[in-house]
Each structure stands twice: as C-alpha cells, then as structure tokens.
Length: 294
Ligand SMILES: Cc1cc2nc3c(=O)[nH]c(=O)nc-3n(C[C@H](O)[C@H](O)[C@H](O)COP(=O)(O)O)c2cc1C
Image (cartoon, rainbow, N blue to C red; front, side):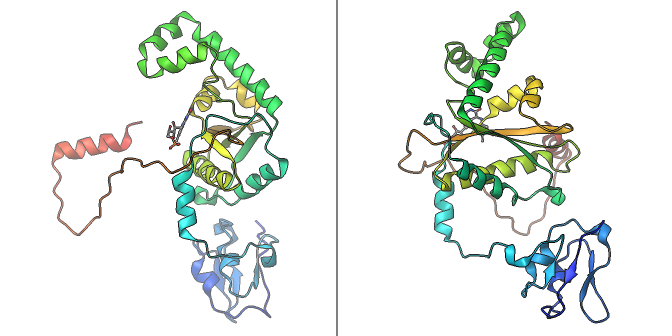
C-alpha cells in the first residue's frame, strides 16, 4: 500500500507530534528524528499526522497542506442555537434547491467521521423535483398494493400506532415524503465495522449544515422501511452492490418558519462518582438481556 508519506525536511522541526498522534504506530522517527512510514499496513489513512503538523511539513496520499481548511474559532452559542432550532419539516416549497447548495452539502459529507476510518459511505441524491415525483408515485403505488392485500390489511388495522398514518396515506396524503422535493439516502458496505452509526452520523451532520444553508430537512423512517421492504428501490436509487441503505433524509426549502426553539423534556443524566457496586444475579441477567436485545 503506497501512502505517499512525504516530509519536507526544510519545514520539519522534528517536534514528533505526528509520530505521537499516530493511533496505530504506523509512523516512527528515523535516526535523524524525522518521521517516516515504518508500517504502511497499519496506517488507517486518518491523516492526523498531516493535520497536526505545526509547519505543514507533511504530505500523505498526495495531499497538500495548503489546500486544507484552516481551524477557525466558532461561537459556541451559534452551534447550540443551530441544534436547538433545527426542526423536522413537513412543508416544502415546490422548487429545486440550487445546484451549488447541494454541491456544498456533498462536499461537507466527505468530512464526517466513520468507525475505524472505514470511510466508504455512498450517498444517493434525488436532486430534481420531477425525479422525486416519479419516485414518490412509484413508492406510493407499491405501498397501496401492499396495504390492500388481505394479510397486511388485517395486521395494519391491529397496529394502532400506525393506523392513523395508514388511513391518511390511503386518503391521498403524502405521509411518506411530506411534499419534499429532494432526498438523500446514505448506504454503506455490509462489511463496514460501524454501518449504522456511520450513516446516522453523516445524516446528523447533513441536517445541521443544511439548516445553516437555509434548508429544511426530515428524517424519513418511513422511506427507510420502504427500502427494506422493497429492495428493488435500492436499484432505482443506484445504491452500490454490496451496500445496505442505512437511512433516508428528505430536504428542500421549507415553506414554513419556526419562530423559536422547542422546550423538550429533559433526558436523564448521571454523573458517576467513585462508589462500590454490588449487583444481584437477577440484575446481572436483566442487564445482559437489555444490552443484547434488538
Ligand atoms: C430516526 C428518525 C426517523 C424519523 N422518521 C420520520 C418519518 O418517517 N416521518 C416523519 O414525519 N417524521 C420522522 N421523524 C421526525 C420525528 O417525528 C421528529 O423528530 C419529531 O416529530 C420531533 O420534531 P423535531 O425533530 O422538530 O424536534 C423521524 C425522526 C428521527 C430521528
């Protein structure tokens, strides 16, 4: 494996930061205290050596330090406000998001973290409202025929939680796509070490960056279920062979404006302090079950 690890000896101050920050021990110092790639097979291509170098002396995989984004100080209040005021949106303008904005979103996605730096996500975008309409009609038709089969009808009526969605859907409401003009599906190779986590993290970043660009989004569990139920839609969305759809996000220009943040119920938090623990056998069994169920 050639990582093209290069050190500009005129710039390197031999501080050793790159070697110390190398997670896997792929880098070592030579007798002149210069870093070199001792164990290329161990390198996970995280580029920490490249990012940490105070002098931009390191290049790896052909990357030029001068082409990297600089580290900026960001106002924490702005980040918090972005998180507090992001909203699931179910009302969209019937127009395409400008191409340049979608390109910005795609460029951002390259920076999301992945477990073990596996970095092999795929993103399928519907960028044209007419294509979205075609997809919407195909999905809805397929679901209507499914809901009209006797067995599904029987179970759908029993599942109270979903009954109202089913009725609204059969009355012609766009329950699945909520009139969104676009969607993005994230998929990952089935051998990914952290398949679900990677995809969900990517869409979480997408949601927030999209909001900062003036867009609205909606996590779409219903469409994710449709992809699981009808794998042929994965072909329509050009999800690569050997990849599994992880989740779907709808997006577009919102047709409504939320004026303030919500005030959600608080989650539970504990601060762990030093203490003795004694766990009974039944609690041990229950904990094992809670950890592994689903
Ligand atoms: C994983 C996930 C899946 C979701 N799937 C859907 C969906 O299929 N349809 C929908 O209308 N909302 C969906 N939502 C949105 C939630 O219902 C929404 O978060 C909730 O209504 C609270 O609104 P908020 O996101 O504005 O705080 C989903 C949210 C998450 C996190």
